[in-house]
Length: 438
Image (cartoon, rainbow, N blue to C red; front, side):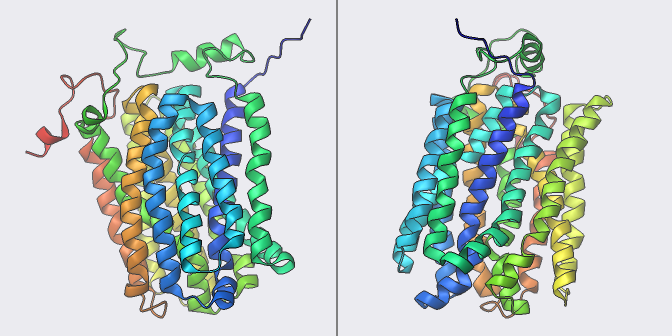
């Protein structure tokens, strides 16, 4: 007779696995930028080549977010994550075979498409496994995974590069994703409704806290894609991510190059210092999630709690972005970028929680994927602008001014476009976006 396994706090084990997947995601995507000075020297490439390689990655990333949003809603979180991480792990290993801009671009397309699944998948897992008051903290935990990956990647990749070279480094980090699959497939057997290891108390806590189903005993509203896009709430999320996403990606993609161009850092120096701002990002992810949850426990509504946390993030980002335009030492620049990324993560993890505040589980990943895909469009534009506005890396103030200009637009989108944060029931009970802008 087999022994029945019961695991207390199973939801936290699930979100921890999602956070680890996110760490691997960021190690894989960051490896190219950390090793770029060495790769560029080996293969005779420049910053325009880098911008083009990043742009095709982001195009695939945008497509992948939209596709995987629907995939996760169709096949579920368990299989969706498995598909995503297998695709991106194979593609990062293939980077070892790249010899030109064209071959790097092909492999980055595969990487971008596969890695994109992590985000709608994480949002869906959050909506399934956490009551509303805990969702921002759970989002913060896997958001901290992105920061942790960015903290780990520079020293780890620089170390592997020094001993193995860039080709072997890509192969070694690809193995991480396949190792992660083992505990994922063992632990994530199903959602909380049917998982055999969950306690009855935790099941009741999760299911009773699903705000989209907890009032008025109404049937679950599952909009079609056109209906989803007809709601002003959807456009609040989409526009919010459109304006905020470039702020993060400017640093993920360009921080190593900024340190190289501005202060003359080589791969070793980049590995020793580029991780520092992401400590602030990790703290911001946890703080933003904690703050909105703490406010709800104190009696604040979901609407006020989420929006206040996003506002705090914006208030951190804007002055720090402007101050970085005059930073003249590596220490000052890294300190200010640490504040910027703290504010970004405090804001984005609450923005990424909004799909589960507005819609039910069968629509959450779709909206998360669409908003992520639209956000990537602005990121691609920003990435292409960087070599131009920085004069090929010789003058960086416009880089930070670009980021600062996006913060007020993000705040307007989140604080005002969507109206009050509450579950969307039907088109009849919520004004479509088209009516709002007339």
